[in-house]
Image 1 (tube, rainbow, N blue to C red):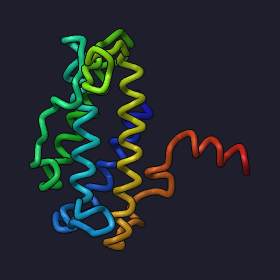
Image 2 (tube, rainbow, N blue to C red):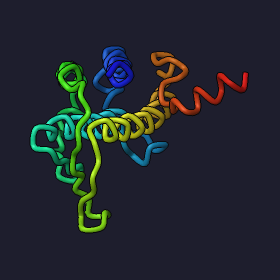
Image 3 (tube, rainbow, N blue to C red):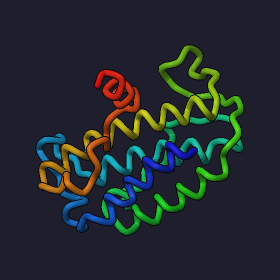
Image 4 (cartoon, one colour):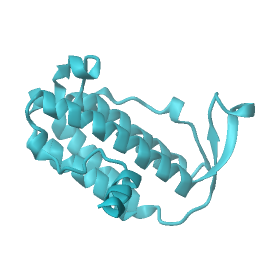
Length: 161
């Protein structure tokens, strides 16, 4: 779980360094979306998965969209802290069913571990978009250079060097 926790601790630190205005700023570079919108979107995939584990099936399309996360940086920080606590509770892998309209028969077999990897990759993608938003408001210095870079890319770069 450490890799997932690190991602969300990085997001938490970023939020703590931003003003509400910066967090909500909609930039043309992100098709008029904000850092908060991208954080909310990534957060909700993790939250949806972790909340679905007891039932044994997950449906990301049916996740609740909490607009307050994208509009209030302090609230986002609270939700991230709660997510970090939830991540500590789920250390065992087990099968899940993923409901997806794109899947044959609208469902497919998966596992907690597989979906956590999906959520991680998805969140890193949104971190990359967030970094563009940070550059637009001249705040990219608040995140480390690897923020928004896929782990496979980092491994490739380290072996290439």
